[in-house]
Amino acid sequence: MAPAVAQEKKGKPFNPQRFRAELEQFITIEAGLSPQEAAAFFPLHNQMMEKQRVIFDEMRRLRYVAPGDDQAAKKAIARIDELEIEAKQLQQNYHQRFMQVLAPSKVLKAIQAEEKFHKRAFQRVVKRGHNPAPPKK
Image (cartoon, rainbow, N blue to C red; front, side, top):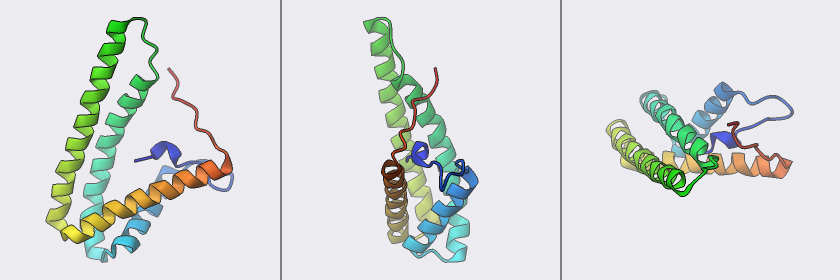
């Protein structure tokens, strides 16, 4: 996921609600979700994204830490590794939950559509020359 890449559009500040709506619309179209399928899928998807955001925020903070010694660096690396595993397990759990409300083929299409959406958002940012600043300490 690339929430940091979802930025300004035509000079307007980033709007998370608009970004989510555009993502949902894109996934709905690309995965061919019916209104009923979308209504069942997106609450779960949004739950997953909120939980992932917490994990990714901690990972991002750890990556910008300037440890004063090797022990602190070792501890940061170990925590980043733990968080990456936690994120993957969370994703795996939600993929199983998605398949309870959608056919596996549609879940795969939704996953692919989300990746495509984020890739395009990132490419738009790069094209504009926007370089997101690292998080503040």
